[in-house]
Every structure is written in C-alpha cells, then in structure tokens.
Length: 165
Image (cartoon, rainbow, N blue to C red; front, side, top):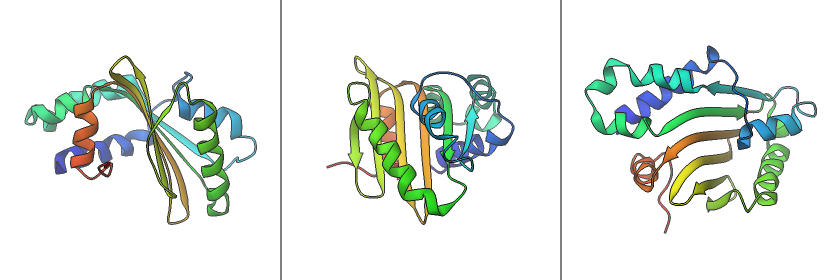
C-alpha cells in the first residue's frame, strides 16, 4: 500500500510538467466556470500520455497489484486555491456544481470537510471527484478512467478514502 501512495504522489509531482487536457470532466468544468473570479486557482493535469509513462516505471514491474490499480486511471486533475480566504467559497461552489449535476455525479461520501462523487457507466466508475477543504486549503482531485469497485476498495484500504459504513 505504501507503494500505491508513493506512486500516486509521484504522479501528482509530475503535474508541474504535464500539459493541460481538454474535456468536460468535473475539474475542467469547475475551472472554466470560476477561473476569472478566482485567478489564483491552480489546475494541474497528469494526462493520459503521462499516465502511460508512469505505467512504464520500474517500480510498477515489481508490483502487479499497483500496476493493475493505476492502469484503471486515464488522467488526474488537481485544482487548488492560491488564497486560503477563498477556501469556503470554492468548496461551496464545487459542492453546488456536483449537486446541480446529480444525474451525472452521485454522492459516495460527504462530510463537512470532504465530498466524494462518482460518475458511472453501468457498473464501471468512469470518474471520481474528491472535493476537500482542510487546513484552510481547497482541493479537487478528479480521476478519470475505467475504475472498478476493487479500485475504490484499495483506495479505502490505503486510507486515501475513509471506509464508508
């Protein structure tokens, strides 16, 4: 599980060099709606090409479970705020956007500091949206791909997503 977290952290670290990706996933839509109002908002992307490169890392050759887990992710987008004063407002707007699109995004777990939404096609999770505000910082982590329930269970087991009741 430590390797999962390490590899995900590596992927997030590659955001600085990854190119932007177009599409209508949650993060892209949110930034398009609010970038002018919040110019300090930052959006980084690990593109499908970068995910393919990650899959070639030597670390993954040693761990088939991790390789199987990451192979389900097509792209990762992370949106965060530059000013802590905007955290509550951004969190409220992101929550509202998800609720307004309730036919597309279904709540998985919500509390006062974090909301998780899933978009599915049949039984396949094609998008996971993590919205959080912790320690004065707002963040959206948007995963796209073809993820299964085992993927979500592995995130829960790695304490990335707390288990639901």
